Length: 82
Length: 343
Ligand SMILES: CC(C)(COP(=O)(O)OP(=O)(O)OC[C@H]1O[C@@H](n2cnc3c(N)ncnc32)[C@H](O)[C@@H]1OP(=O)(O)O)[C@@H](O)C(=O)NCCC(=O)NCCS
Image 1 (cartoon, rainbow over the protein chains, first blue to last red):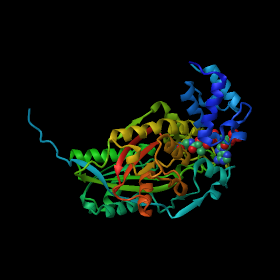
Image 2 (image 1 turned 90 degrees about the vertical axis):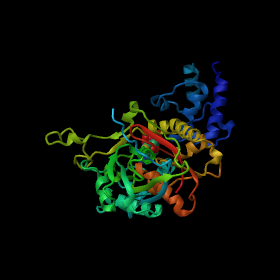
Image 3 (image 1 turned 30 degrees about the vertical axis):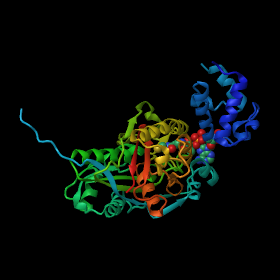
Image 4 (image 1 turned 45 degrees about the vertical axis):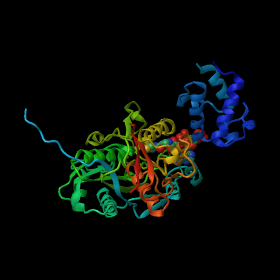
């Protein structure tokens, strides 16, 4: 079952909370991972790996660079989840 | 058909002694910053590294190995003449022939011990340990000296911001010998050659043949650059945190050890962030002592696990008889993980 946009945002919030310790409610679609959520380039790799598992998507390294905000990641997962 | 007499080995093998050598020169991040645009804060937060040791001219691969091995042999309480084989894992001994292991075996005073080098990058210690265990149980040696040694400063491009701060030099050695109890678990090891491009030497040695220098990369002063280790950092990081945690778990399962049974975790010291992520994924309980020797040692490839092991035992953070999970991973890509009883 493909996840809805809301489910993806909620899932990403849990992942970011687990990895960077940011409160779940702070993880909103307009937030930038690096600038707003304290997710640096290496934590981002961990977020991506966790998101791949959770949403059954493949996010290649080259695409990770384009996922600046929670919204970018949500859209990417919506489009690519199987 | 004539009958061949089989060899007779020990029932099991164990690590009997460990020793390390760290070069005298301590290099803080400030020195690294002279050649790259970075900051102490960035290096610490992305890698955990505060200082590393760089070897001087006299601290050769052989010399550092001999120092570390001498300590390991003393710690094991055996005489060098009892050692049947010397296995050296290194990627930074620049005279390929002969193997540096033979010089080390001779200078230590072994009695013509079998001696050879292996190339298994940052998994070299686990590869060597697995060979040693096999030799002891199979009966071709009673005691085996396994050495991980690197002068990675010789293979570091100080102008490359992705790697300049990472690497260090040093040697770590263990003596492996017979045991009545299992003290080295099954090895979970392997290679992923499809990812061979992610960590590699910038240019192969044969490009240095006279006449072929024009196409070689140059440094900021226009000199031909010596080969260095280069890597796709993010790809390696992803592989390490995702795949290596699984391999570590497999090694625990193969040894029949649960995280609760574990006392110590000694992963290859590649990046403190990889270590922290593995600890999380493996759900290691609080009581497990985790080696974070990287802070003051940097990444010393094949030497990192025995160096970290020696330090934990020396400081009393780990003790003899503790159960430790060790995992090495790196260029190849290759990996090896196992559970051992600490000497
Ligand atoms: C080397 C490593 C620390 C680099 O971290 P990284 O997050 O992958 O670095 P990136 O190259 O993606 O760069 C991320 C950001 O930091 C910057 N950066 C890169 N190197 C930098 C440095 N030395 N100092 C300051 N900033 C640096 C980049 O410019 C980039 O900034 P931007 O996002 O504004 O463009 C990391 O990839 C790593 O440790 N990987 C594992 C390597 C390893 O362990 N190898 C050995 C295995 S045996």
